Amino acid sequence: MSLRTTFVNIFRSKTRSLLTMAGIAVGVFSVVLISTVGAAGKEEVSSTLLTMGVDTLLVQPAENAVSASLTDSDARETAKIDGVSDVMPLMASVTEAHIIDRRLGSYVWGVDKSADTLIALEAEHGRLINNSDTAERAKVCVIDEAFALQSYGRSNIVGKKLKMCLGGKYHEFEIVGIAKSGLSSLQNMLANIMPNFMYIPITTMQSLCGRSTYDRLAVKLSDATSDDAIVKCVTGRLDELHDCKDGYECNNLLAQKGQLDDIMTIVTTALSLVAGISLVVSGISVMTTMMMSVGERTREIGIKKAIGAKRRDILAEFLSESIIMTLLGSAAGTALGLLVAYIGCMIVNVPFSVNVSSLLISAGAAALIGAVFGAFPAAKAAKMKPADALRT
Image 1 (cartoon, rainbow, N blue to C red):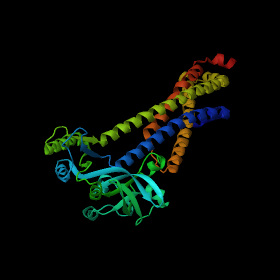
Image 2 (image 1 turned 120 degrees about the vertical axis):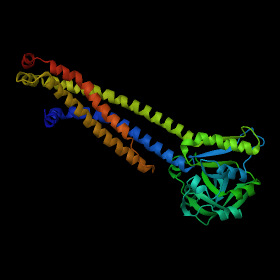
Image 3 (image 1 turned 120 degrees about the horizontal axis):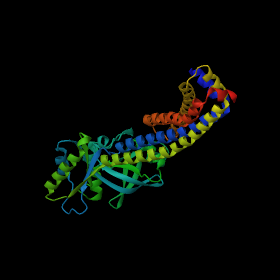
């Protein structure tokens, strides 16, 4: 039987066939939308975490360690370990920034020139912290783009002044750069949760806070696959330098990112399976439509059998109709799901990402549903005896 004949048979009752395909389309639309949004969200969170330095190890003194500390010599010794490509000392503090007449809660980082490498900072306007700033203990800062927009309503505010509280006192800093660190989209969605980020020379932060040590070391790895071995080497070397045991702890952020990815995958899959239940419900409408079609075409089936059509021919005819009907509904649902997901990603400024495996699975599930729920009507039509069918 030709494909053209199959389409003619499907659309003998246009309204009934279109409603059946609409039911399939709704089910596939739900699965595609959830899986696509999940894939886009996972990709955005993953890329954002990487720009925040999640592909590094964060080493810090253990809470109960008395003699453990982090100094310049510790940073130099850590950098010598095989598998370590870069080391940057870090200090961090939650503070309040005064700019114009606004007070904004902020998270200030003390960094050096390696900040663009370890936490993927990129200067949108102006520049980043450099060696000269660190050597001179300069009171300069780099702020993120969201901070600038909240204060002045525009991104380029290089040269402006702000005051921030460090060491119990307020100090005036000059803004020398606006960083585009890849956090903008998350900050837009989580404006009330995520703080603003500021970056100042780490030597300046040490001076203002009256400290000569660091809070932690950010350790960049040459090969992320060997991170567990590097963790033992780094903590072991620091214990040896400070003559202590288990004096340091290392947060493997890359492993935590992997766990977060797994959780997001499980949640997306679970939601897709729940949405997929509607596909099974739609399968019942496919069976109903095909049963009605068999009843309406009983005499036609009898004529075909009388002139030589075999059971397998009748079976194939009705099965192909049910499968093609579900595939048409699946195609419409997929297209609509991708379109809605694309528009949503554009609205929230998140890169569009497609989960190809989910698209293939939903298409395959639709075809399977067409075959399974169309099998009984097709078998009923194939078993008809020519004489009985012609008497109808």
